[in-house]
Image (cartoon, rainbow, N blue to C red):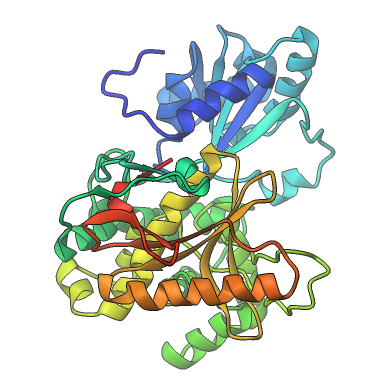
Length: 421
């Protein structure tokens, strides 16, 4: 369907490809990141199950007969399908019956409720592909020039190019405003948190939860954004910093709720070989889907962020991870982080489906580039000495660099404001 003013997204090409190979696709991700808008852009008819018109008539009819929701010109968009879980099997059955590709686009900002998930249901494997969507990357929002392609970078194919001066104030504004398609900046992030605490956290399984404790948990995650903090560490953070009583079981349960709502996207650890003698730390890296969310939770402004460069660095890393995840998805690559017991760390690891991988350090200022490059080279030597495939690409993603280039030691330097998929 034609959408006036639609801003094209990196995921568009992925959607087109998957519609040619699968009967349906499910676009998942946090609220307000553009799933419905993008799904409508690729569909020829639609039903919106959260539409309040006529007392939610569309949802009521779908509950009575899911077949009513799936009839229409294809691709058919079914928005917030999880509100009527029976639609999943109806879509899967209809795909089998028709025997054609590109029939349905499902969108949703929450997983199916826990009680519904216990009921027998076909997985949809081979019929319905799952895609992850996030708020806009800097390239999608027009804040990155796109002079450097991540795909080309992963092949070691970039040329030296002047990318222009970037002010610290610009990067701060990018973090605070976030990548919300409809704009609104900080207000959108504030309302997102409010909706989560007042409504969304209860809709996962209709279980009453303590909004105050959930808010404390969110603030702890914000303080530990882009770090490998365990459930126990989060519990300690809340009890020690906020001086609040909360059980570790409650922390664990609430973290699961946030995962179900796509409020968190945890980055798994990387190991080059399962037989490696290198002891790799297995903690995930806790990550919000957009840096504006931890900024809102910590009540940060651009001025406060510039006045606290340590926090600035963590949230800059969060923004870069959002973009790297989006660009990596487009090339069917996976994003990890790396930590071992030799005190070696890599901020982001991107592994392609052929097993080749790249190591990325994320640094705000140019004064950090030399140290970051030395770290990447040292870790690469460790992998070689242990007999494992070293990273094909070593790269420092920087905030303040005015150029994309390859250093004499072979390490690439790329400004995040010049990167694209």
